[in-house]
Length: 217
Image 1 (cartoon, rainbow, N blue to C red):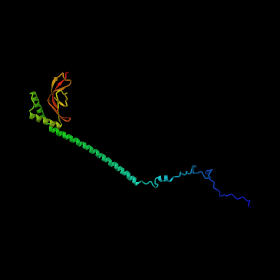
Image 2: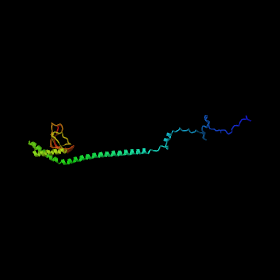
Image 3: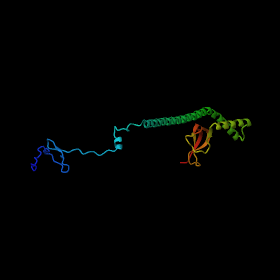
Image 4: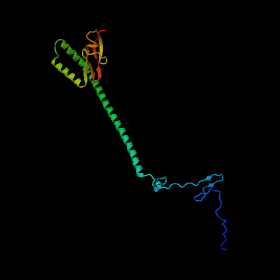
């Protein structure tokens, strides 16, 4: 009969207890034995080709040999520059020490050579003072030799000091005697110079030997 109803398909979609998405009609998730629904993982965002190239293991991430060689060259250059600067500083310090030692050796040599001549200069001073007390001058020949010797030692750096009226300085003067108080002085003063003092630069070769007077109390 053409108007007979077709039997329903008994092999239709199986019945399930999973909730069905009302839009797609698919199961929303699977429920495990503990009764917890498992939600399907959401698909990740699409990646651009440049993003894939930057990931570890992707092509193009290998180190650039030229860049590594340039970095190594710069490190070696910095190390050599530091070594050169250190050597230059050591050389400058060495040069200064040599110059300082040379000056000290020259000064010590001058000191050793001129110290014995001081006694000769003392003799010249006494002869000159004796002649002045007698109202005379040194003989022409002796005077010429004395003046030449004084000029020579002065040119070599030996300087004479000590004059009557100088304030007493224990670093420059040796007090042989005190003459008592003198109302004309305000500080302890060198009144008589027994022997002149000599120095080379700032180094005292011999202190001036003097007689001093003290100010009134």
